[in-house]
Image 1 (tube, chains in turn green, purple):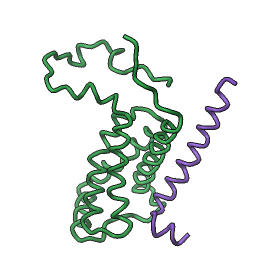
Image 2: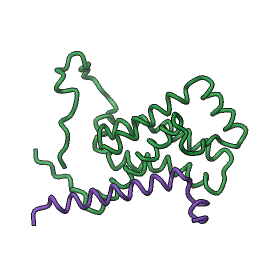
Image 3: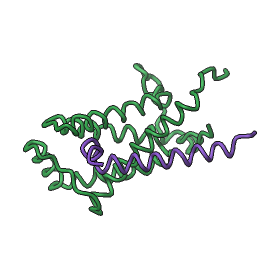
Image 4: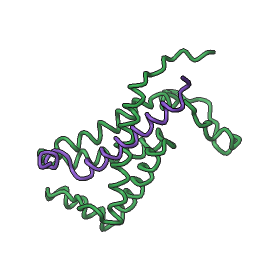
Length: 159
Length: 36
């Protein structure tokens, strides 16, 4: 059956690419800065947020998050595995938004929700790739180990 | 510049700059590839 989905216009395509570059660079810089310290660290001043982030650093989980951010940043900037990486970033975006709203400052009241909104907006823009996940009843089971390796990944799109 | 610093963090300013450069490169690349 022919694909009758209307293609997005040039402006929309560039707007989505711009948001992807912005979000990707933000994640990459945030992740790399944890290891390289080239910008001031952003630990929340609010006692609850500060305690949360300090505990994350002490347990080593913050480092794991920063590695995820670096991978997300590289993927979004190069356009590889974008839908998967947006899902990986979503819990981080929710946490950033939540921490920013704990004790909002004029900047964080914008930057926190913006992080989450950008993540969700990009997921909606790449929505077609999530549609196979939205099945309420999955009777047929085809485990990865029963599929030939060439069916694991989709062929790269040239559009 | 002070207004920009109040509105956007250093991270935001850097990310905006990189995104702007990348989108311009992409537009120019697409234009040069498109058949006339």
